[in-house]
Length: 320
Ligand code: ATP
Image 1 (tube, rainbow, N blue to C red):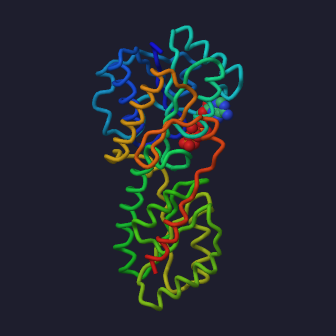
Image 2 (cartoon, protein in one colour):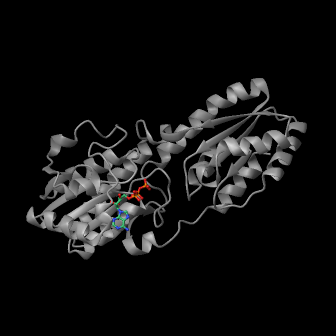
Image 3 (cartoon, protein in one colour):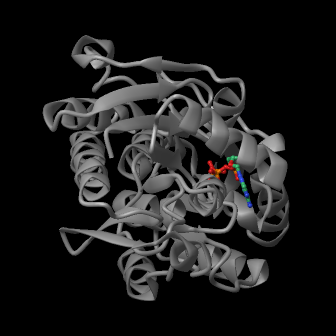
């Protein structure tokens, strides 16, 4: 490849900028021409493509969001859209694209490969719901934000003998709830991967109250339902604590990325460029046990991320 482009797509996540910076700077270092595509696949179809130099990615490593902006694009899910996108790239002489996004964005990249463009994907999503990587870019920051919020809730909860129901992101993947729950000492972690019974949750909370616990934290991944609904059942069945609901929402997606996310993004961005230079295509980049790996996009999008039951059980053991 001689000319490559980079785009961010789907929901934004902290560390996407660090990944863009790595792709641009590594590409230039290895003698490639690098282009930015504004607003994901929508920008591609609008030919919103511009050259990027070393300075264009200055002062962004610490910023949340994405300077390339992101969008959802229906047209690109059609074959005509994909053909049009590939033609726009060919007309500009661009033969490789790095896509930073979630699994929908990965599927878009896979389709682009079928139209003759070389692609590499980077996991840019806070949900940690992408397989063949231990972590996605933004996940560590999102977990830190949840833990920080729970620290603050704990102060006021213990003073008032309340329970805190904290709704966090994760439609299909409970990893934010799990990791934040372990780190913040939550008594209850409700995730889509593990069946639960709210009556039993309430009974356990009542038991804990009798054993002297003056507060109780329940983390609810949005995929299992609304925090408000969980709070209603708990209030009816565990009158000991007064439940209060906090929905963290998009706060989890904002703010400066942690060092971990910046370093993961930097390593993966550089790795994607080096893979493209070696002629590799249609792969998703990830980090497994500290090592960088490239896996077929098709395999990644058709494999559900494994839930860490050991960690889940540990969190429950330690929160009695
Ligand atoms: P998040 O995990 O934050 O939701 P995502 O990448 O999964 O991120 P999506 O909205 O699913 O977000 O996908 C982003 C874009 O990728 C879509 O708007 C669409 O343009 C493209 N895309 C999604 N699925 C496909 C598909 N099957 N074929 C082609 N393009 C797709």
